[in-house]
Image (cartoon, rainbow, N blue to C red; front, side):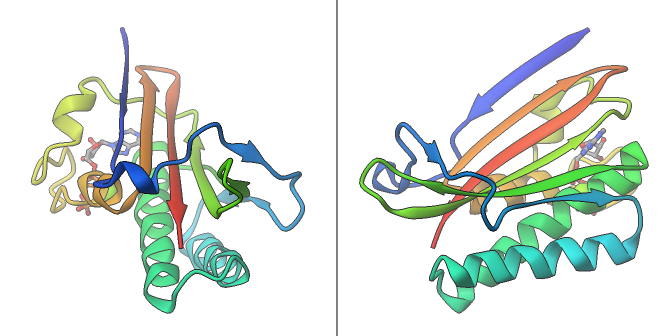
Length: 157
Ligand SMILES: Nc1ncnc2c1ncn2[C@@H]1O[C@H](COP(=O)(O)OP(=O)(O)OP(=O)(O)O)[C@@H](O)[C@H]1O
Ligand SMILES: [Mg+2]
């Protein structure tokens, strides 16, 4: 069974990427994630890229928060995976950051339920994915049971 959900996490359409044009991996990074140290690495790289893109200090911290939550989920539910950080540009030339968290773990049976604040299959707070969705300018999640999960987030500064 597989299910896909695509939703926008941004509150303002002005903040959306429209026709995203990705830079080459120039300055981007694909970070393997399997332990806590990797979360620290991914967070630092994300913060660095956000600062390079002239994100505000607050927004750079939010980027690090998003990366943390997605990386924690990878470790907890899938064991390992990747966080890929890429610079993106809107058509208007506005610089943004794309964060992709991917794993080949067990997948999510009910994506809508996983996005509800307070739902957790592990006794957690169940705030990770809904929080990421709220912080994202664009949010997309794709998951197939037995195959894995990919969460894609776009953020502007
Ligand atoms: N990469 C993943 N692979 C499989 N299931 C996942 C993955 N990420 C999230 N989930 C499922 O979605 C649920 C909700 O995730 P979310 O991050 O919102 O909460 P949590 O991890 O349970 O708790 P918290 O993040 O607040 O500590 C998880 O409990 C888990 O069932
Ligand atoms: Mg979580």
